[in-house]
Length: 270
Image (cartoon, rainbow, N blue to C red; front, side, top):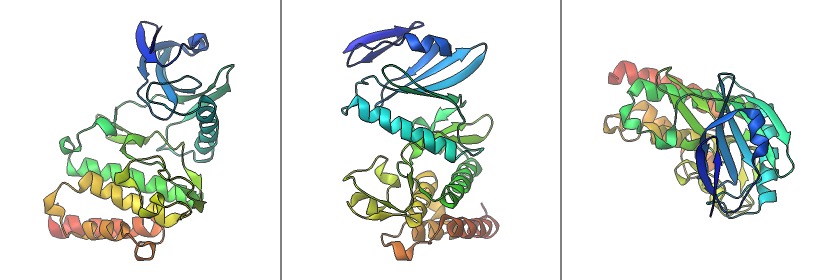
């Protein structure tokens, strides 16, 4: 383990690495080095403006793959951010090939990563707003013919003061339909459809639908008063183990969800 320091921020890596290239992006005020993806992330500030840097080329402590693979994956991720530009997605502002790696620079998103956020502290309406942003974005993703491989709560940053959520990680999204070639694709098991655990299975619009239902259970599932409510039934259908029983598109799911939500609020009194 080798310790590094940038602008008084210390972090450890498996190997020594040259970060002199980082100086031109500004002063480092935070580092995210606890990543299994192979990426090392920095918060930087220049002339009063914060940016988020995602870099592949070093060896984070939790990464056990090849550096070249991490670099190639980040280059592929760049194309996703360019093709899926959306108001709810963090904006890619710069990309660059470096001597020993590859870097993406994004607008800084204020807030807290939802992996570390206790959703019990959010109101019912706040959680609904988060879900609505997720659903609207993935209806757009579906229209662009992508599968949301790797989507999880860690893909979201929530700004409680502004009441807004940003999608911050779409690096593993794939063109649909996509044939699963991994025993364990990236992502959280809570958000993954059954077909994602089978090599050779096709991931498509219905895989996206499953993930939308899983998101509903993740953000609302702890509320026992919602059991058997209209939105509960919609989410339950979306997460059917068999594809043919799910909604066939995110667009269809989203339309039914909104109608069910109206009934849930009006009749069930939420």
